[in-house]
Each structure stands twice: as C-alpha cells, then as structure tokens.
Length: 474
Ligand SMILES: Cc1ncc(COP(=O)(O)O)c(C=O)c1O
Image (cartoon, rainbow, N blue to C red):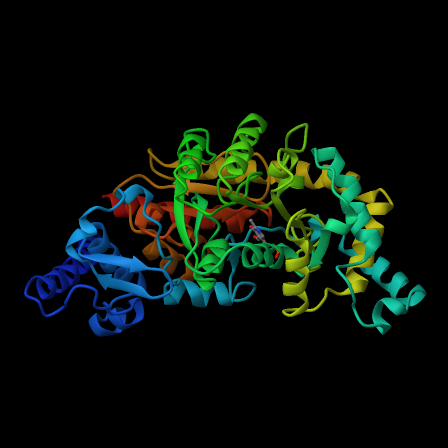
C-alpha cells in the first residue's frame, strides 16, 4: 500500500518537474497558459486530483499563477511577491471520476448505507405528511390547479418566520423565499451576491456538495481549518475578513457537516461583527439547526446580523424527499426571487401546504424532540464500535446533533480513496474524506451516517473497514 501512495505522491512531483523544466528552458513563456486540469489528466493518464495537485504545486512554488475562470498561467518573475500559501484562494477540483459516479448513484446499489446524511423513513412523519397532502390536495385544488406564483406559500413563510423567533431571528415572512431544498437556497444566495472568481471562506472539512457548487459557479475558496473544539478557527477566519482576502463566508455554523459541532453564540456574534465591518457576505446553511441535541436550539449567524443570508429546509427533519427549503435575506431578496424565477420558477405548492400544516398544527415540535433523541441514541453504538474496532490513534468526532460522525484514521493508514473503493466493492457506502477538501488533507478520513440505525450488518461493516485499516498499518 505505501508504494501506491508513494507513486501517487511522486507522480505529481514528476509532472511538475517536467513543466518547471519547460518553463526554465523557455519552452513555456511567462504569461502563457498551462494545460487545464482535464488536459493534464488525459495527457499524463492521471486523475484530475493529481493533475490539480501538479498545478497547485507549481503555483505554490511560484512557477504558476491561477487566474479566476481562466486556469493556470506561467508566472512572471515579479510573481515572487505573492501572499503566503495558507491564504491563497484555491480553485476546486472536480470530483474524481469514481467518487462522482458513486455520488451520482446515491440511493441505489449499496448494501450498507453509511454514506448519506439522513435517516431511515421510520424517523420521519411521512405518513402524516402523505395524509396532509391528500387532504389538502382534495380540499384546496387550487394548490395544484394554478400556476405557482410569487416567492412561496404564505402560510408556510409565516410559520417559518414564527419559529425563527425561538432561535433569535426576527424575520418578515416577505423576506423568505421557498426553494426546492436547502441546496437550491444556498445556490441562489451565492449567485445573487457573488461573481465568478470571487473568493469564499469555507469551514474545513467542508460538505462536498457546497465545494462542488462553488466549483460550478467558478468561485474560489479559502478553507479555514477547524480549531481543537471542532468548529472553525474564528481568529484565522476573521483575520481573512480584515485582510479583505475573501468576499464571502459560507458556513454550516450549526451542527456542521461533517464535524457535527456548532459555533458558540459569542463566537458567532464576533464573526458577524467582523463580517459586517469588512463587507463580507455571510451565507449560512442551517439545515441541521433543528437536529441539535442540546437543551437549546443553537442560534444562526442571522441572529447576530441582519445582513446574514439564512438558508434552511425540511429534508433533515420532516422528510428527505419533501424537497422544501427556504432562504431569508433582508438585502438581496429581489435578486434571489428573480434568479429563482428563471431557474426553477417555483416550488410545489402542495408540498409547501403540507409542511405548513405540520408546523401549524403543533406536531412538529414533538416530532423534533423524538427525532433528536433517536439520532443521539443511534450515533452512540456507531461511535463506540469505531473506537473499539479501529486501531489506536483513530479519532472519532462527538457530534452535537445530526446524523454523521467523522473518523480520522491514524497517520500511515491506507489512503481513503482505496478504502472507499474496497468498501464499495463490498457493498458498503462511506463518504471519503478527500471530497471534503481541495487537497489531500483528509485522505486519512471518512464520514459515516448513523441515520439508518445500528444492526448486525452495520457492526460487520465497521469490523471490515477497521480490518482494512489495521492491515494497512502492518
Ligand atoms: C449541510 C447540508 N446542506 C444541505 C443539504 C441538502 O439539503 P436539501 O436536501 O434540502 O437540498 C445537506 C444534505 O446532506 C447538507 O448536509
């Protein structure tokens, strides 16, 4: 195994050396365009990740500079005066082909489902929602029979606004737009506020769908590592704001995916103040906020600044298939509404009405209490098995809510890409660490889902994963 990793390791160095040679001997002139990630990958028969790593190595060693939307170019001599590597904005690599294929088929062909971040349908009030849809479809035919207009079903927006008071946000229903899931809400927010090439600070590790979304929007990122408490290093983050190194901060500040931690309120207040003082746009994905296990639901950043854009939804609490999300913004609602209109136009009124009725009738809070209790109970056996079965030195996160745990294998263990492929062969789905970053910093990590409960098959899968890990250390 180490040989294979060494090979991968040296491969990008070899390619980088060849390109450096071509730059030194003048074959590649200053300012000329370097091959794209894809071209390089094909040319040298390597993965896009290795190709990107090659280009980044050239960038780090100041042989190349990255230009937003255009790619990498041979550096001029004066490019030596660049910012230090740690704060260089980065382009995001496309997912490697196997991972992309795997993610595209999520929901099928997997015996042990540990790769998602949601739960078994028994955790959700799906029967109730089904019944509400039937009743409302019958009693209010206009929900289906008329064109979807405006920014959403008003009673739902009013329920969302009413509930937001409990987590510190005074929101007008008019400043809410209903979306097709939280992901659409985040995408609209990014598109409404940023332009290609802008730099976004994200928490690292970062939920891979957000990274790929930034990639697709031609945005660059600066990944800010989590501190020892498991949430973003607030000092490093706000230093970026003060240096004007980023235009936006995209955060899962409550029950982060994948680390499961929430940024404490005082720190959120500090982040919001610093962002406002430095004109940094805040976009917050609060989809897991309602799943927090503690006594009090954590506040979002929006509670500390009216400028924060708040995105959330009901996929993690009401039903994964309901596809109802929402976005709230004081400043850019018109832009968001216009983007929504020209992309998906509207969101199913019947689904919105069913969720509104669930929230209105009071059943939602009782359901949330039960959901949180069950999730907290399901995570425990998974954590314990991981700690018991994996070799010493393995670290397992202690989530404060949600569905997932983050596992760090000891240094020297097999590359998680290899673990991912072995697991997939055996019908075990895991979310490999490398897709949560733009580089190889999580190549020894993976994320597991506890949402489908604990049973013999999961126990056996954990033993198998642990065995592969142990064998790789021999
Ligand atoms: C942080 C985060 N945001 C959004 C989503 C998806 O939201 P939706 O299904 O409502 O689009 C997920 C799903 O795992 C998630 O982890």
